[in-house]
Length: 114
Image (cartoon, rainbow, N blue to C red; front, side, top):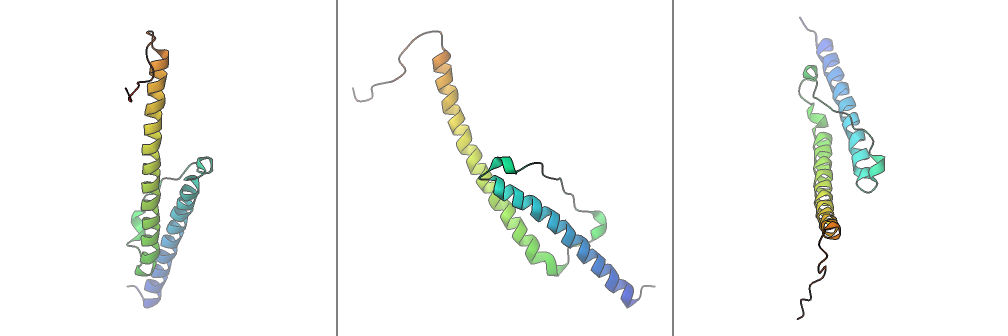
């Protein structure tokens, strides 16, 4: 039979476990945010899985978890946009390389004013 003190201790332990988990996630997020402008700062991110024995996140930590999630989503959007621009630039470079490496010399520029 659990006493009130046992329940309080289990809640405190669960709260501390979730705070530690959020700290780790937020540290990876901070590194990811910084790497958007300086990719060399990223390093290796850790894979995180919700431990089964933590139970649900305490309601007092929910606002922090939601803030972390919103920041993660922003980083993903920013990285997606940059990846798209990088792919476009790479396609241009690949096109120029293909033309430059072609066996048949030909016009590289088209006079669109004629």
